[in-house]
Structures are given as structure tokens and as C-alpha cells.
Amino acid sequence: MLSVQEALIYTMVLMAAVDRDMSDIELDRIGDMAKHLPVFRDYDPDRLGATARTCAERVNAPDGIETVFAEIEGALPGHLRETAYALACDVAVADRRIPVEERRLLIFIRDRLGLSRLVAAAIEHAARVRFIQPPAPPRLPA
Image (cartoon, rainbow, N blue to C red; front, side):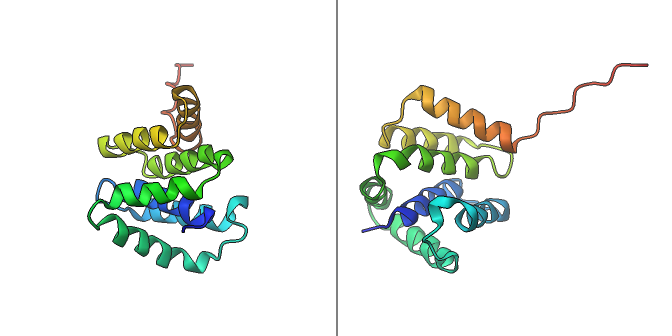
């Protein structure tokens, strides 16, 4: 059985890998969150690489995504399901683009974790505001 922290890391790894292009930016974001967020207080960040590799191996098995996500669901208490979704959103916006595969996975995660569309939209908006810089407003002539 997965620990809570492993379930959160698995969720982030799934998001980073869904487009088959785990960028350094996404990996750095996962590492930073695993080192600094209070939910990872009892997790040894030196285990992050092994946890990510195990997740990738398990996802590539037959029925891998379903099996892995069932374990994620089983490991996450209700009060951390929004946290898992928020972490997935933070990884999704890490490289400042959200390909269609990542959008589909966010919907899958939202639905599997039983989050309302309104809550999910608020979490997604917060991630975009924090990590995607809007273009500068045009300068008016003096």
C-alpha cells in the first residue's frame, strides 16, 4: 500500500509523464514540492527518484494506470484529495503549456478523486495565476 506522500508523488509523476515528455522543469517542480511542502514533512526526498521510477514501472504494466490510480485513491484521505489535484495542476503548468493529454488527465484525476468542477476550476485558476505570467499590458504613449 502506498503512503500518503507516495500517492501524492505518483499523482505528480503521472501528470508529468502523460504527454511522454517529462521536462526538467516538471521534475524540478516535483522535487521542490516534495522538499518544501508540509504534507511531505515525513517523506525522505532522497527517495523521490526511486518512488518516481516505481510509479513509471507500475503504470507501464497491463491495466497500469487503473491499478496505480486505485492505489492512489486508497492511500489519500478525503482531506488530501484537493491537495493531490492542486499538486497535479502545479506540475501541469510548470512548463507554461498544458497539452491536451494533461488536460484529459486532470479531468480523470478530478473525477476519480470526486472533486466538484467548481473546486477543480478554482484550483486550476490558482495554479495558472501562480505560475503562468500574463503578458505585460501595452504601454501607453506619454
